[in-house]
Image (cartoon, rainbow, N blue to C red; front, side, top):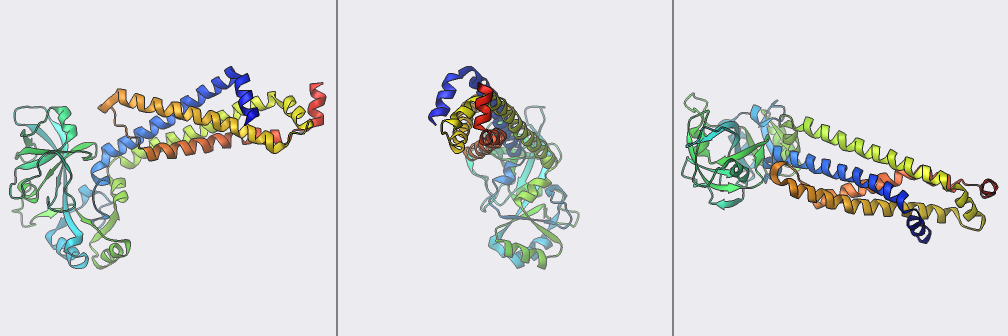
Length: 366
C-alpha cells in the first residue's frame, strides 16, 4: 500500500489521465445501464409491479397478452383447479384516447381489473374506481405531462365511450404507453358482447408456487402458464430493445478491460528496471503484485465514485425527459463488475511483475 500511494503521488499526471479514462468508461456503463432499466420500466412497469406470480394465457399465444383470449368457460376451468382466491382476470387493450375538450390524441393501454383484488394499483392521487360505475378510470401519472387532470373526461377512440379520471397511479405503463385501469363493467362497455361469445379477458393473474402452476398447466390443456418475465419477453419490442442495450453494456465492459490492460501494461514495462532493483534488494513478488492490485483498486474505486455522482447528476438534470432508472442494487452490481473487469485487465501486468528477473533488470539499469 505504501509503495502504491507513493507512486500515485509521484506520477500524478500519468495516473490522472488513466483515472479520467476510467471515469468516462464507468460513467458510460452506468448511464447505459440506467437507460436500459428505464426503458424496461417504461415498457412494462405494469407487469413488473403486478402482484402475481404467474399469468395464464391462451394456448399458443406466444406469451403475448394481446394475442390471448380467455372466455368465461376457460375462467371456470382454471378456477376449478387453482381455486377462487388464487386467480383474478385481466383485460388488456391498446387504444388511443383524447380529452373531451381536446383533439390531441394519446396512446394508452386499458387494463381491466377487479378493484377489490390484488391487481388493483396503488392510488397516489384521487380515489379508487367505484366498482359499480362503468365510466371511471385510474390513469398513470405520466399523463399529467399531457395536461390530463383529475375529473377530466377521456374518450376512447375505438369504442367512443367516455370515462372520467378519478385517480392517478404511479409506475403503470405497458408497451411504452400509460395504463388506464378500469373495472369489469367498463371493460364490458367497450366491447360488443352481444355476438354470443360473452365477456372475455386476455389473461388471468395467478398466485401460486411452481408445483401448483405446473399442475394447472397439465390439467387445463387450453392454456399456458407463464412467469411475469416470460410475459415481459412477449411484449412487442421488449426483448429486442433490451438485447441491444445489454450488448452495448457487454461491449463497454470488454473495451474497459482492454483499455485498462494496455494502460497498466505500458506503465509496467516502463518500470521494469525499478521492479528489478526492488526484487534485488529483497522485495517479494507478492509484495509488488499486491501494490499493483492496490493501484488498480484505488483508481477504480475513485473513478466509480466520481462516475456515480456524474450519472445521478445528469439524470437529475434530464428529469422525466428520458426514461432513466438506476437502483442502488444495480449500482452495486455494476460497480462490482467494473472492479472485476479492472482486475482482469491488470492480469497481464501482474504476470510481468512476477516474472521479472532481478539480475537481468539490474544489468539493463546499469
